[in-house]
Length: 245
Image 1 (cartoon, rainbow, N blue to C red):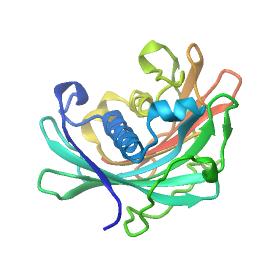
Image 2: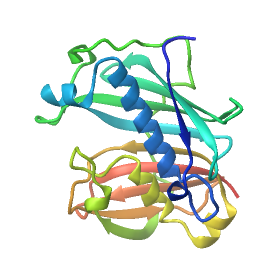
Image 3: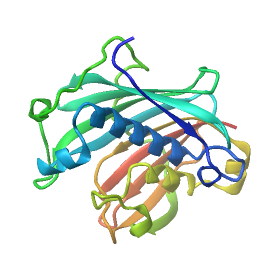
Image 4: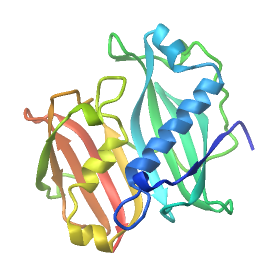
């Protein structure tokens, strides 16, 4: 086993839904926290990055869930850097239960960005050591999430980005997009489905005060597709929820 960072977390009451299942957004937040811990442990703390006008931008998540953790469960989240592909950094995750059984895994893509010029930087611009782990893998490199032209989407609702959703980068935090997708579901869908996976690609940051129009599909072969658009028609994100009904 190569270089790997592991954090343990107890699922609290404010992190669960009406069925006492861990919210999808909570899992994404915990994954983000583990990634932060991993890079900080190798020298790339937030303060060090900001002093160089650098930041990490998550571009794609492909999460597979065998079991969704519940209230009061203790989980372990392991993450590691899996090298680079072109300008993108590969980061994988495995989530284990308290018996060290795998309950979820994810493959993600990140970009190193100049937060002032808002442009992607080459991996060679990263000024700290980052120890790649090429021995372990949670799966193949994810493709960018796209929705086929023949998938019919309909309007679900609209939201305005406000204080509760933004992070220190001044835009809607990546984990909140999971809540946006889940909020587009019906009560019947929420009551009867089991989440088996979630894939999302972030195309454009959503800033304070911007309006996002949420579109979704019907259930198509165990998939529900989501798109977030601006009032001008530009795309914030494409996502897909894999479910068992």
